[in-house]
Length: 534
Image (cartoon, rainbow, N blue to C red):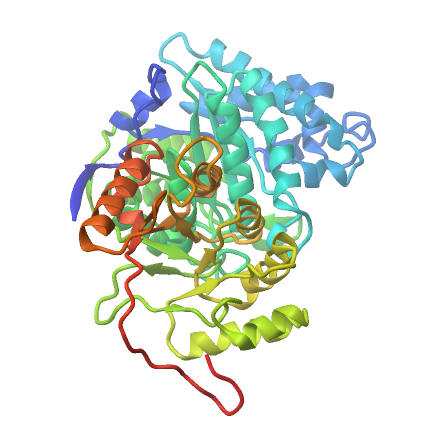
């Protein structure tokens, strides 16, 4: 257990000076703005303002920049340190519904420029910042609505537009599907890394009243999947009011080694005569956020649906000049499925990785794979869950098969049908890539080794960028250019080399490295059911 400064906001990337926003977040609580959508609705834009694209709020960035700028002004006048851009729907899925997905960059940049200009107007007494809003869209890759790659490319367009427009941070918000969130975070990270200036990256998930994200992810799974992607803060927004967020914030406070943000609705929405109404007044919302800031060490707070400039003014009054506090972190290393987090270190037993979904180790699974009986493959996985496995080893490597196609077929089914984290077991980078792009949780990659060296064309160097992109943990095998290690000294030498390389070159912490010494006993048990040996 370690004690860190609340929201231990990571340092600026190497070679970049820390932005003033990063510095502020490490010293005091920063207050963002409130709702944008309800503020726009209150202004009742015309169909002409929407260019006949009713409900496409992002169009207003080019048709009514004055309206959007006035909303930003109201929040800055209320005391906000930062405002979010009017770009929540500037993404592939939302704009495609209107047939204008080609305008992602244009609308994102316009939204950032409006906010930046208004922020400059209010920077006479203290610095104000712009947070680029990147919403989830309506297509969830885990459910097969679209692909990880399509989303990632579109999110790059949005991120580039926001950065070119002057955003100080990018906020991936209201995420409902961890695979969608990973696509957005990784797209934003690419564009941020291409910049000379320091731009923060924030990820916020939406937890429903059921206690999980829309697709069933618990907060522990979300933290485990997203924190390794080099986000600077992680948090919650939308769906509920602050009361329903309390236990999830408590979990983040105890387990997140990075900063925490919170932007709740002004209470649970109630259906009224004019649609959704939000019951919490300014003082109630402010009091809740003040309490959570002190209890959970929040760094960035604000409001979501139903919150107004009056709510933000009350929040500012409560937390003005409030310094960040310290919190104790007790984080376990582990992996996650879409649904749950599983620690590597089990309390009362060993970590059991089920091997019956490995085509090289299970005849039953191999037969199902060759027959392309995908449902039978899922059934075999479920059998291992019932038998007490903690993770599942998935390998489809088989001579003459298209491994990337096979892993896509099976992993896409395992993503929603299997509750355990997946160990992707392959020596082929293309197969690993295809599997990772179907699985929203945090996988373990098996195997990383030096069989063909560690040069730029080696499998090691082709696999590790995929590990980094998807924030995976790794299983390293004691194999080097001379072959599989056969003595204790040889195994230890390779293990040390692997750990040093993964630590120093690839920035993989030791707690996320599992070393397989490839040691087999002289005798072993096999398992037999009524028809097959395993």
